[in-house]
Length: 241
Image (tube, rainbow, N blue to C red; front, side, top):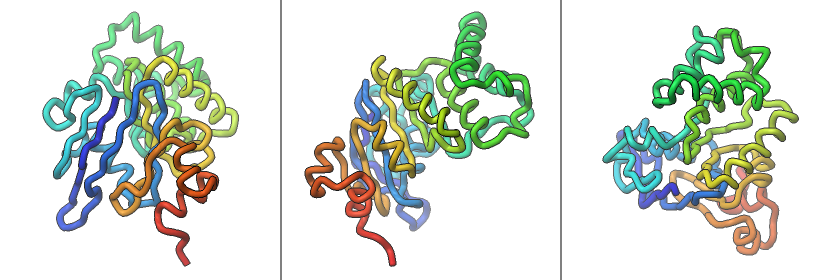
């Protein structure tokens, strides 16, 4: 489980998060929604131990991200915005390097890389350097890197970025499988269709604060049985002129 309690983060005088609290449960996919600049990526960066919170508590698998970040890193798989691949390494080298950092033994690592290359249809780029990859190819390799050590918690920032329709459908099925295995999956996305198709629970952030949260049925009832896009617009304060 991922637990966020009264989490706040300031950059100088600018508040990025203010008293944000929510739970992402094991065996479920939790969708994190919000406009640009709402604080979604800041929240994910705190949970992935890249940033320290200014105030509040965040735990992954019961472990404080502030008190024991190394232990948290062992049990998370992260897909950051922009993928963050090493451009002069091949796809397989990027995945292998991360697996070794996470302590996966070489025979197990080789088997898992083969499985991930097949599952994500990376055969054509497996031995190419990442520098020339398309956005979709970078996303796929970053997903493989996030999953190679089989973490129980996944933090995915825009996981369908650059993927074609068939790849998106395959990824949806895979994420549902991972959730059924008991993984805790937290996804940030701007694509309402993706969150609507995947999420068991929703957290909507606006201006660094929680605007709404609950499962899709609860939110639909609260907002007059509107679809997710209308719920989102209502929760964050209406459409801009």
